[in-house]
Amino acid sequence: MPDPLEHVLKALGRETGASSDFDLNPDVVLQEGRKLRPAGVLVPIELRDGAPFVILTKRASHLKHHPGQIAFPGGKQDEGDTDVIAAALREANEEIGLPIDNVDVLGTLPFHETVTSFTVTPVLGRVRDTFDIVPEPGEVDEVFSVPLAHVTDPARFSVQSRRWMGQRRSYFTVPFGPYYIWGATARILRGLAERMNP
Image (cartoon, rainbow, N blue to C red; front, side, top):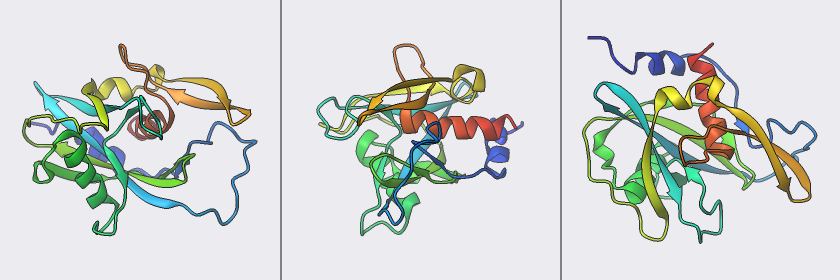
């Protein structure tokens, strides 16, 4: 039987550059010497009847940063984390109840720089077994899954824009049903889509 994630593993072997929230805004000049903090997000892939799905979260609406947005489980690297992969796994455990030992790390994508001054490393992981999803109270409003085929299909993406800090900022979106996936999450998925559809 072929591995249903074989195309993902091949994509991880392809070379692409880092990305940022400003990729579609060439007029933005990023400050030299800016201090960026390392972070990791988990791209958890589970199989349903042999088809891969990506687990995402909807952030709580009262949060200071990115309220109500669709995001991967993850966060900044803490002192106790050995690296950004450990940070991503720890945060996924805290945010959605995914046991760390239930994830096979497949690899990482190049880092993504956010407007909030993080260098986010996306960590792709295979969820081996079903688990009881437990949204972190006060942090996560909802946990849901989208077909990997949907969020890695370049035709599903569009570019939109809005005003941000007095300037118009463009960004990728890849909506799914009632979920408006945009910003860093959509840009990371777009990078994976580009690797899977060279």
